[in-house]
Amino acid sequence: MQTPHNTQTLQNADLHTHTTASNDHVQWHVHLPMKPLLTPVDAYTLAKRRGMDYVTFTDHDTIDGATELERHYGKLPDDFFTSVEITSGLPGYEHEVHVNAFGINARQHKESQRLRPDARELTAYLKSEGVLYAWNHPVWNESNRPLDMQMLETLLPFFSVIEVRNGTRRKHLCDIAESLAERGHTARVAGSDSHSAEIGLTYTTAPAACKEEYLASIRAGLSEPRGQYGTFPRFVRDVTLIGKENLLRMARKEHRILRRVGLRALARSTSVIVPPIVYLYHRGQDRSLAKVTIGTEAY
Image (cartoon, rainbow, N blue to C red):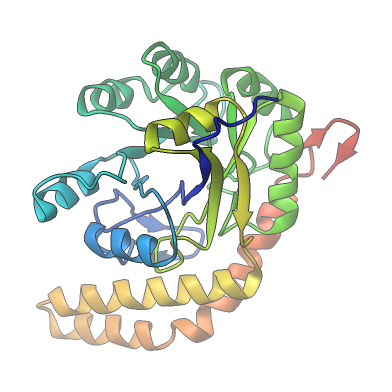
């Protein structure tokens, strides 16, 4: 294990955040629109208020949030680095693979989008460019179909960093990610995966004197996950808040009276309909892990 330079202190960053710039869509498994709520400026401000030394956005398949932040301040803040969550996959398998790329530039982002259908090609490119990247919530799957252990085994050698703590994922799911990281001898990171105001509640600590050293420390395996795990009550609260606000925003833009009334009625009912939806979603996630074994353990 490497030791930090004497001038370095432990620094914090939430390495999985989303803003209104994100290319999110209706989440079918919760049956609600889940567009993130915070603007890039609001997300940056909240992260700093929560004690984050560095800030980044990992919006889905876009770096527009960084562009918006730069436009607001006239330049990107010195404690900010541009990142993106890339929606990838593995040919022959139905599951999405989400890859965070940290400190990425516009040219690299454009090429990453071209290569994203195959996570092996994508990660090979990011590695060749010296871009730090991580495998997000590796045992999450968007459809609750049974997760294939062979897919995890195939992907593991292509990652040197794994997100082992996610603020929207329950602890037993994060524990599986931890086991996967141990098996692959990878570095470990954490992030809130916030689509609302949870930014900075789950984060990654690493020794650094600047953001470049922070990313280098993660690459060297010196990072530690910190903060909250996801829970059923937290996820219910978050989905209710996000779904309700999205529905109200849709209603405000809707010109058809009956549809506007319907959207507002649905928004008022989210506190009733979300808990059973989340319960069924969590049960489906757990059942999807029936064939996943890490080491000698079966989940």
